[in-house]
Image (tube, rainbow, N blue to C red):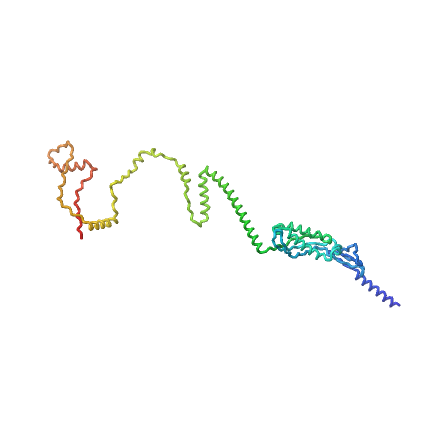
Amino acid sequence: MVQDLVIAVVTAASAGVLYLAAAAKIVKQYERGVVLRLGRLRDDVRGPGFTMVVPGIDRLRKVNMQIVTMPVPAQDGITRDNVTVRVDAVIYFKVVDPASALIQVEDYRFAVSQMAQTSLRSIIGKSDLDDLLSNREKLNQGLELMIDSPAVGWGVQIDRVEIKDVSLPETMKRSMARQAEADRERRARVINADAELQASKKLAEAASAMSSQPAALQLRLLQTVVAVAAEKNSTLVLPFPVELLRFLERAQPSVPQDAAPASQQALRPSRPSASPTQAPRPSPTQRPAQAQRSAQTQQAHPRPRPPQRSPAPPPASVSSAPASTPSPPPGASPASPSSSSSPSSSSSDPTRPPRSKPSKPSKPLAPH
């Protein structure tokens, strides 16, 4: 009898332990528990911690409440401007209603993934290529709205959607590169033209300021020379401007030619005027050549020998003594008229050149 009682107690205790083990459930902090009793949803959602269910009658389903990061597979599509692209994205979502996520959809993860792919294809067809490349924020918001609309009934909230990458064909990449290069070149030309316009205005102002002060131009020239000469790697050719000469000419006081003192004009040596009839003398190097040419000419054409003439007697010197000649003192011998006339003739006109004797005619060379 006692043994039967002990066996019954042990059996009851074992059954109680087994019941407790089957009924006790642990729900984690990031999870929520949904209880189905006999296949029917209970209204209460079990929170995190220890909970009890009726074994064999209740069934506890745990739902993860964390934010899920799901990559959207790359989708091929054609944009509104007929460009084939390949776009992939990433979606962030979480469950806000565990009962709806468990009851309304079979697998909310798979449903959200398929909805994201469909919405991505739709947003590609509605957008241009430039929007996909540069205006992604607007596309991300539109994609988020397209996925979030059906996901609200599933107890899922779309937290964020991002377009991750846009793949283009190689031909389109080359075309876009050429377009970008042409746009850069256009902008560079516009910037250069604007700079030239501003520089021309400043140069015009500087020229108008320098025109009133000519010395400013010379100072600017010297500054440029100093800047170039500082490098010491090139030859500097400095032009001498005419403006500097004009500036120096205006700075120097002008003296008229007639106001020069007569003593300076008297001290200036007078240049002898060259005689127009005097022929230039041949140089020593030209004399042998001229003598050789004259000898050849005489050999080719011999001249007849002129008859020899007797030399004429020298002309008598004419006395040019003055009319009144003082008488010689007594005791002096009278001088001959010829000796007294020659000194007076030579002293009377010192500028008259001496008379030259007549030259004898040269004899022609005999032909060989």
